[in-house]
Image (tube, rainbow, N blue to C red; front, side):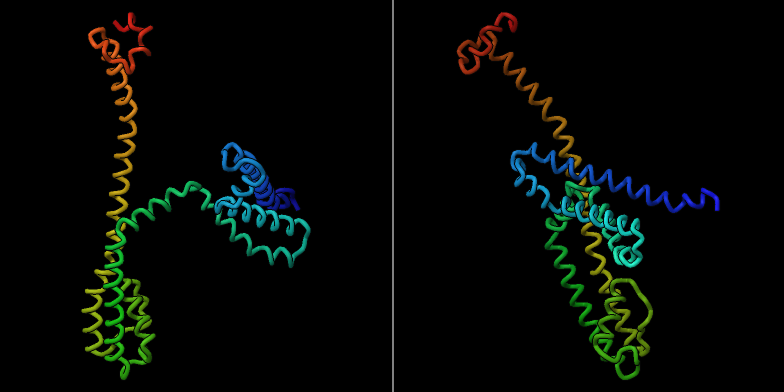
Length: 257
């Protein structure tokens, strides 16, 4: 056997080991540096910081990865296969990409701002689903074995009105098909409304954030301009009655004149 074939299985293991060391070192450094904040000082404060959701996720992923590597290096096949399912926890590393939770905050703000519209659309869509499933069940239960129970009809209505359409259950009578077509045109429109509401809400929220950033860029220059104008006005000899800031600029009065 040549050395390249022997080294192939070692490459993923070495990469995994290096990643565990890097992430573990970064985790402990983050716990130690949390003391810079006044509310996380001391071992109790650092323990409070370690109980934050993202820190708990980091710790779980670190321990799971370390356990999988340790079981694999010891040659314990049973332990390795038992711990292999823990590799799923490594997917939680993707959550760490947004540590400040800006994505979830944006989604929550959009849902909260349009909660009434979303509830209305979902409520009407749910009513259409219930009535459509019941009427199609009444029309198909005697002639179609796919609609033996109302639960079967409710499954068909959910798949149809959400535009998934598996095709495992279809109406066969002309009454059922007529009802299905009518309720599909009505129900799909209400089930599609939340997507449009959330899309427009995201667009408005992003536009508001861009406007806020533009305002933040203009606020500091505007404040500096107002301060400079007031200093020039208050240090003018014609406005000596302004005693609020006069003494502060009294020593610099010749330079301002």
